[in-house]
Image 1 (cartoon, rainbow, N blue to C red):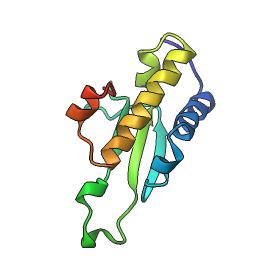
Image 2: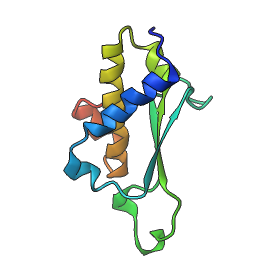
Image 3: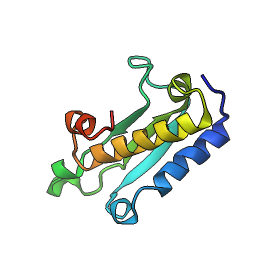
Image 4: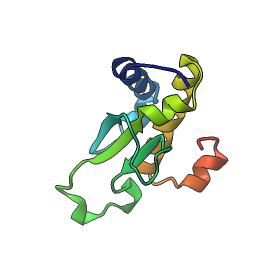
Length: 116
């Protein structure tokens, strides 16, 4: 496990979002990012979470909906990492994974693509 403070972790998450191709980032619609220390108690090892309505499931009733939320959890991520480079890689995978859920890509397909 590596120790990385909240501010540095936030920088690494923001950098991971910055690495998302601009044409893909431009398609994100009504999404906000949250960085939290701990995952939900029912899944304490969770690294990230997408909470929202994927683009593939939105219809005419979606207007005025609260923003979708992408969460990245610091402590579970740090728990499985030994170096800052490990954190960079893990956060990058987590960010892509959660953005993919926004686009309606399910876990099985993400695992096939290497975004477990």
